[in-house]
Image (cartoon, rainbow over all chains, first blue to last red; front, side):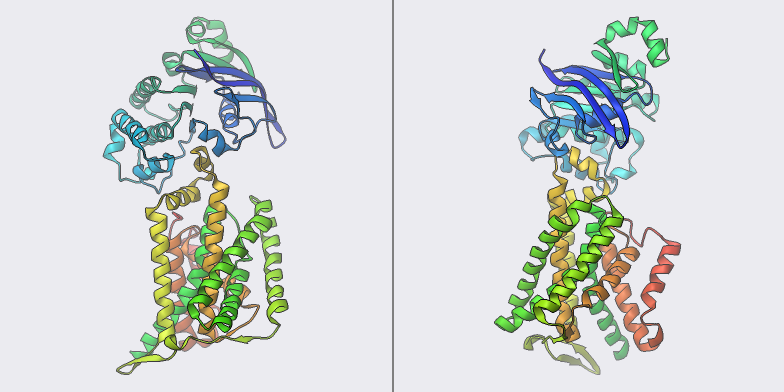
Length: 235
Length: 286
């Protein structure tokens, strides 16, 4: 499978703090790559660095072979990277429909077909189409954030902690949706919930203190009780 | 009854002029998080350029268009040279835009001279209508109509067009808008220019209303503009309209009934709003 995204020796400073101190991993086309690690390991900052929101001070990020390290955020997004932030980033005073429209580069057949697809995946969004995003439940906001990122011509989705703060039944729905979306797009997922991460991830990268500890197949990590205990506090 | 009606029309007309100034301010603050104290300077330049164009062409329409173009050019220069280097730093924004306000004011004196300049009302808008005992001044009605028209146009743009949608989304979450592939810096520039054009239009309409223009008029109106933005809710376009009308009406009625309080009434309104509804009358929605 082709490498879609390559993060190579990336360092990121935020103010005086050296947050990422050498992050490297690859995401292959059609796979779900999961970034794992404890709180403060640098998972969210890694996603933000890929998007140029907290630009890398060292190292290279390539997407489909193109160096995107120094591009502005909107330029990176336009290469085909969609983002679902931890707080979902819903425009609360815009309706569900308007939230979707902001993300659409153009309203052509392909984009509208993508919209149909996500609306079938998340029927609640269709139901609350004219409702303000701010009035949705936590789960519905998560669905909207994922749907919005998907319709924006995204070939790679960066999804940050989609299960955070959601009820188990909603987590199950979100998980099923990610599994389905995987058929159409590559996904890099940050997830604290190891049960969820292990079920939907193909590969993993373990981060600790802003560094990559190890990467590999998710199935291997599931068996590795020692690593899970040491770096994830489980097992 | 005729007195009340006249005070109302007077207050509404003043309110609309303040609205044109505050509309740009609130969008610039709401979207760009920029405190632009130079905004009043653009208002004054709009007034001066309209009077200049009117004297040159004898056409009020050309005068208005000339003022808008002046606002657009000055808005572009201000955003690129003054605002861009200080994004994200309110203290620097206040200092540099206040400084630029003084520069714009002094430049007016250099170009047009230090004295007040009379401003004519075009003949077809001069005079008044008499309906029974009520005398309605035509130009004031004209300002009110233009004000509502501009509000309608901008509301349409904000609510019904893609760029409006992006601006409203940007007011709420700039970072997220960028991650959706939108160049927020370009949006900032367009909004700034639109705000500057509105301020210049406000100045152009103000000139015949007050009869004379002077370089410091920008600073005087800018303070009212900021009061309106605070009362209306920072970043809220409808809030600015409502607050501007309130300020205009309060000023008009107070000037007649309690003249000693006419200058303080705006501050009192702002204080009441800040105490009971610090976020302003309208929540910022763009």
